[in-house]
Image (cartoon, rainbow, N blue to C red):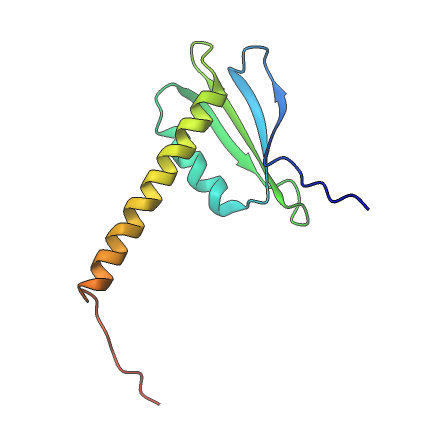
Length: 111
């Protein structure tokens, strides 16, 4: 029995210069797929980006990225992941700050 863990990221298909590539991301779902697609499409150098979940029983998503001017889709993916991480940190920081300041609405549930 093999205890190998699959690579988190795998390149399925690509152009020789990586200007267009399909990446498979293991152990992720629509949550990261849609967020990552949104972040990639904010980049004006990205011509196209889409994602799919090949099958519900497969624990992977496929992300297709096509770049303008033969730029690297891998660089765009890494930048988008970094930007998404920073965005999540900012949201978490703001949430925790609001929670500590008790700047939220409370209500009593009636039975």
